[in-house]
Image 1 (cartoon, rainbow over the protein chains, first blue to last red):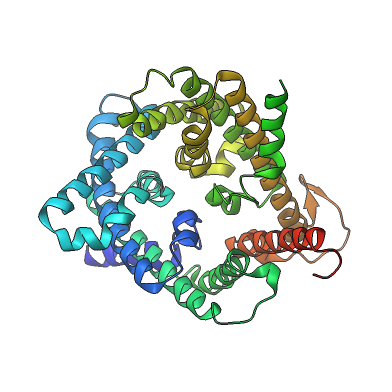
Image 2 (tube, rainbow over the protein chains, first blue to last red):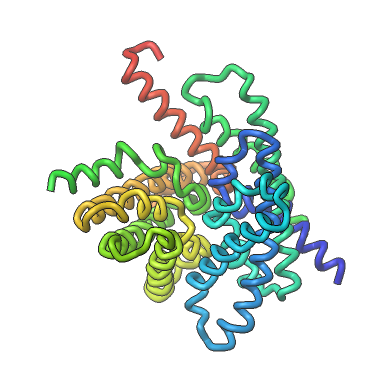
Amino acid sequence: MIKSILVILASAAIVNNFVFKQVLGICPFLGVSNRVETSLGMGAAVTFVMAMASAVTSAIQECILIEFGLEYMQTIMFILVIATLVQLVEMFIKKSSPTLYKGLGVFLPLITTNCAVLGVALLNIRSEYTLFESVFSGIGAALGFTLALVLLAGIRERLDECELPKAFEGLPIALISAGILALAFSGFQGIF
Amino acid sequence: MQGFIQDIKNGLIDENPVFVMLLGMCPTIGITTAVINGIGMGLATTFVLLGANIVISLLRNVIPDEVRIPSFIVIIATFVTIVDLLMAAYAPDLHGALGVFIPLIVVNCLILQRAEAKASKSNLVRSIGDAIGMGLGFTLAITVLSFFRELLGNGSVLGYSLFSSFTPLRVMNESAGGFITLALILGFLNWYKARKKGGSQA
């Protein structure tokens, strides 16, 4: 039991890293990877939302969509649930922990359109994970996303002080760094 | 009519969603390993964009401002479901190749951004022009990207082999190839723009 959960966690976080292998969540990956601090904040917010979204969508799939033969409503249902969930989490954090809200607040609305959240929900269903496994796959995916974000942010902070060809300043050089990181991560392929 | 054509040109070149506005990055890097995937994804996105822009433009005076984002998402998700089911029925191979990226058209920031910036403020004709321009601009961009990746990673275009002896660059078929190809295209465009603006010294 514990072994299978560890395998799911490690597979989602490293071997099938969401950013480098599944290529999901690229917009926030490029958008908030300017500084290490902000990328850690974004990562924490995503982890929170992904774990909850995985649990809720998995339950909905089991108890509502399959039960009533409505699988074709999956996309509409999931995106609505995720959008509502993000709103709910935002209100809850605002009320219960103003400090945490200050840290995560700006990132929360952005997460609705982070395709990694809907992506993990859909991939959980496609891998036929149970509710319990889905939660861990969500956490693993979010940890992998955070890892990728922090790695790129670290590189970009250093690149800021380098002299670059004018045409490659900003996003192009960030994309090349991401490409090299992805190459490094492809070394993990086939471990499990 | 002039505005309509202007909107199309705007989306194709001046504000190209991928190369200029950097929207919709996930499918841009995720599925562009073969030209046919690029074209299929581009046209599917164009269809969703067109449908969503038409409906949102028609309903723009009915939808209350406070709930406009959830309403837009429901409208977009409806069209994505239509595309998903149509492709599963009529193009099962392509549907399999694009996989999870078809339902993920819902969260393609390009579509929501156009709904918010254009369709919710403009009349029907302009919204249609905008959707066609942006959709084709997106299709053009990801087709160009997938052309280079298929050529270098597979030695073929649209599945037809071009060389008799060719060692494919396998990295092009992985996400790393997508990141680097896009970086090189953006760098080239920056260089070209700077050169055009500043004469020969660039």
